[in-house]
Image (cartoon, rainbow, N blue to C red; front, side, top):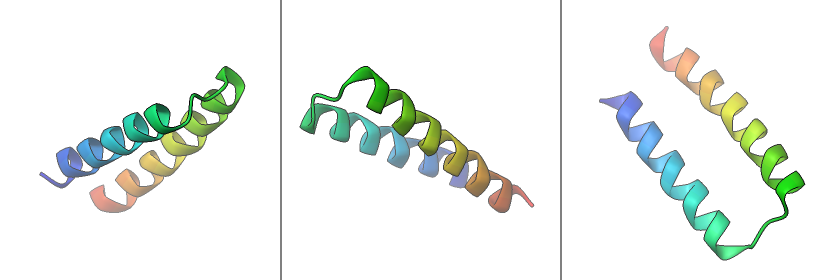
Length: 48
């Protein structure tokens, strides 16, 4: 339940940010990398 919630919120946020700013690919890569590292960090905390 919590995992689904985090995932859906994260995906919506990413999509809205991408739509808002037509980002360059380099920035997008950095952003996704940062988001994924935070996502897995939070997931790790939740699952413990």
